[in-house]
Amino acid sequence: MKDSFWYKLLMPFLVLMLTVSVTVSCNGVEGQQEEEEEEEQSTEIVDPIMTDAGLVSGTVVGDVGEEVRVYKGIPFAAPPVGDLRWKPPQPVEPWDGVLDCTEFAPIAPQITSSEVEQSEDCLYLNVYTPATNTTDLLPVFVSIHGGAMVIGSSRSPDMTYFAQQNDVVGVSIAYRLGGLGFFAHPLLSEESENGVSGNYGLMDQVAALEWVQNNIAAFGGDPDNVTIQGCSSGGESVLFLMASPFSEGLLHQAIADAGVYGSSRTPPLEEMETRGENLAIELGVADEPDVLAALRALGADEIVAAVPVSTSGTELQLPNVDGWFLPDLPLEVFQAGNQQNVPLMIGSGSDDLAKEWNQYGDKNFACAMSTVSSEVYAWIFDHAPCGSGGGTHCLDLTYLFADLSTREDMCDVDLEVSEAMVAMWVQFARTGDPNVEGLIEWPTYEEATDQYLKIGDPVEVKTGLYIPPEAGEEEEETPAEPATYTNTEYGFSLEYPGDWVEKTEDLGPGVVWRVGTTYTVPAVRVIIRDESEGTTLEEVFTIHLTEDGEKTIDTFTASDVTINDTDFTQAEVTYSSTAYDYESVIIGLVTDGKWIIIEVYTVSILPFDYEDQQAEILSTVTFE
Image (tube, rainbow, N blue to C red):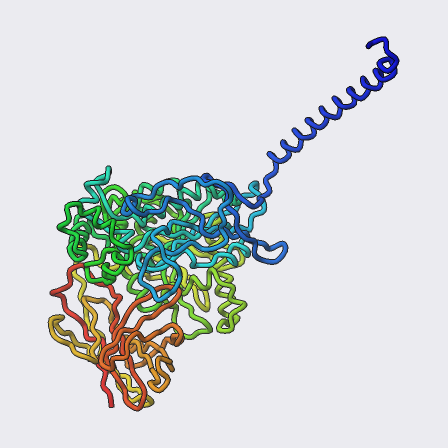
């Protein structure tokens, strides 16, 4: 063969081709290795993104150069269903393929008029990221929704605009609510390896923050710079998390908005266990051979419907002091200096209810923090759209997260207030200090100077946060001076007699009372309804009577109010807003086709046991 003509002719060519082939092959391997190394070094964020449980794919919104990637419904814990109901959150089961995260997950079971899908499988979060790479990591802003621990969802706030404009990664989280999130029972405590029960909703929040630590860098967020923020029960959650040892290392700044009241009414585990036993009786399962199995076999809607929503001392939606997750009342933890020692912004709106919340603790928490840290900033939000009254509960969230330039009900002053507020909040999230060059200097809170920032028109530094008496001290409560307001257009008068009555008396229609209160300025909410137009509401406003008989009026939009019953003598009215829902009672009627609905406040500052306390007559309504 080697002597053949073809062998001698082709052999040189075969050798040449083999050499070229080997060279090309080696160069190809080298080129592939270089490409792989470049890919490994690349920090560009490309969808889908790998989390510790699998790939997730979201959507891109915004104009070119201002894009925000939005990932909705990312699971951060296993579904708390079946045997996992009323247990601490468990790890997510990894999934194959790419998880579609373009739609919000169902919201936690709750009583609401909304038709949004609900499910006990609710432990999901949303990520809003403007980041384009994982090299220049951005501050992370985690929002915890409010709703009295019984309503709400991670759908609010929409953090798209906030993330886009401020180069922060926004995260909104869900958690179990009401009886599914905070139900305690002796048998559940016995079942637990830690000997406690309840607080599952707060444990969910910790699990979400742990997810942030493990995954947010892949979305361009900095796990070493996480700010938690919440309003109302979201603000309460911020303080609970700061008071829990399980939050250590999970947060680096905290913003508690209107959250002091709820965090101050945290009963001990034993009391919540007793309430849980009473609920089991009410649900008809207390005598079952296996009470827990019977409770877990109930539908989520049955649990939700059976849990009372009130401030009467029977609530089941409250966190409890269990000595494990919550070692003590949050204020006690702060005063002992055992909270997570991170920079804190604490404040509330200036509406009548928020003022009471502020009086019951913002200064207490600020004082407690200031003894162990100089990084405490107090504020009061005292602004409303185009100057129409005072700031209302959690209204500041609109100024923080929304694009006000697109809203017709906002004016230039609103935009200026929003810009200043956003700049300070974002600066705090970046550095732990809200002071921004070119804006007013915001001093840290110190008990000696008692300074806070009033956010309104103008934004200014004020002094004099209220602080209640020490525990055990009596505070003298004096009713306000008598005051009268007469409405000739609708034919009724409103009188505040400056008097007290016993709670046991039947006050009857036309009398609004509040228990054991420091609230000295009477206020009632008045709704004018045109009977001929069905449930169409003409006007909704709140009348505040001052001691000299003057009045101020806060206006609500009619779309925020729905009438659920048409009984002329007594009917429930539900207010729905971005902040909260609550119910009131009709106690008056004006003829000629006009209803006057005088609201009996159902949300108030009450102690747990108030059966023997006095009630203040806030107003008496007289119809012509």
